[in-house]
Image (cartoon, rainbow, N blue to C red):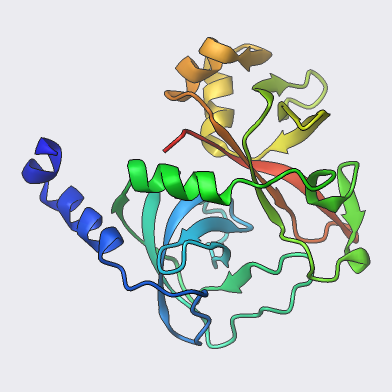
Length: 239
């Protein structure tokens, strides 16, 4: 609590989050201002907890060419919805379009975040995203299933690097399934590269990341050659 008393910016973020007017649903009004807590970010999509409703939303952000997202886990960001939020993607029903780059206001974590993550954790409901294997044809999606799953792994997670192409993968156990996903979490990839090791797990992984990974943020991609692919877009601490 002393930290909040000393740091005016931290105090302002705490006040913004905890005094945010609450809604039962996500505000989809064109050109409205929205606030999110970042769970994972790639140039394709940024996944946030909508601070007004505590629902998971995916933001399409118009990043400039050759510019990589600099948003990190638990950043608090402010965005403005486009005049057309484009809620017509049946493979990514949570996705909305923001009109410009979001404004990073600070970071927020603690008991409230831990409670949100616990509530948002995906229950066992068959295979991840309703299908087995790494991808599914885009035309099979009907907008009935989410394109985001926050996973509390039974085993792992473990980071691995492939010899053939240098890609980083996340392996974890979830309700009896042994899941392997391409890792698109920039922080996890940099941590893997810094160690110069081919695999990281347990205490070694926690040391490399700077925290113990409690959740795996998994998402579906936009269509690539007609298929949507599963990937890991974030390794998250407890909160």
